[in-house]
Length: 442
Image (tube, rainbow, N blue to C red; front, top):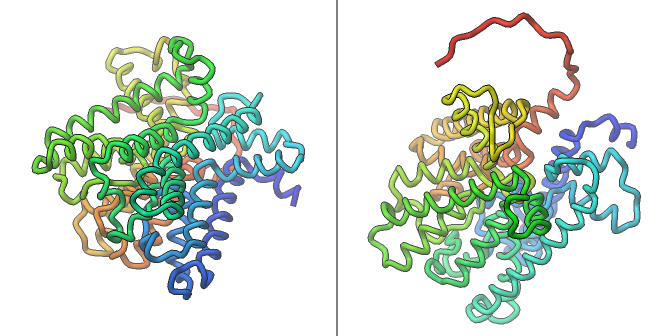
């Protein structure tokens, strides 16, 4: 087994780790006591739910509160926690707690899993990651408890507070509000200041990435000292929250009271980037608003975070590259630094892969189910971006469409480029270069 482990690449170990976790979660959810009716879930329902939880997506075929028992909800929460932190991160934490030595190979895998810039100190970064995750999830539980305990009683309220805090921080979007109305998410708290603020802050903090946390914790408000990646993540995240929020407030949900419209616009802007909660009925949005939601879901959060998507850094690098072409510059620059050429190439490949997965999934589901294309593209973007938002068609889809969504969720979480690297890891690059010839573009 050790020999096999040494032969596998980091990409292969990451995708196998997620696959094993999903399969284990599926088997647990099929147990009779995992569902409230005592029958256990069908394999495809269990697989879909386990994939959605492990990939911190939030798409569901069964209402989490109404269908799953306390044990089933606990399994889902465990999958969300491990999936949000990363299965490799979780494994390293267990190894370290058991006093086992972390090998150089394991450190290298960990570096890839959390998108650390260098191998040195990666284990210390892991400890910092776990401590910050626990601190914010417990703080979120504490802040949500007064509202949920007042609404649902002490013990149930504490469980709801913990569940939604972990789900929000891990950008999962699973909720337990189906007791009041199935698949209602957080619509009953549309203008509740405490719930909105806590959930949004947890989503944003979980989505900016582990390395950004460390940068902020070391340099505090000395922004000039931040790494280029941290500056890019924070600036792009701020723009992707504020600009859509202004659009949603001005042009969507115009018939709602002012407070609901204000909170709703801000919350939908935050949650669209892979969180999966919603406080307003997304079917009430115009096609333009839904299209903006699709773009936000595809972009997602930061690398090395609990969020999915093609990542905000990828978007920024692509836009900066376009600007450099417009200005006839030979390199892509950000914040007074030159972006490495390999980073630009990776960004182009990632965007291409996500667009292919997103469009292919949407078109296939539309043809299979005979549904409008925009609705299916929304579902496809939600899956590959691990966002979890839906226009209400998830439960109506057939088995084949659910399998397509499972593949999209899995690809979106482990990373489309990681899958390609894993599939092509046996190939060897040659130092020789072919003769060059210009191709006219544009």
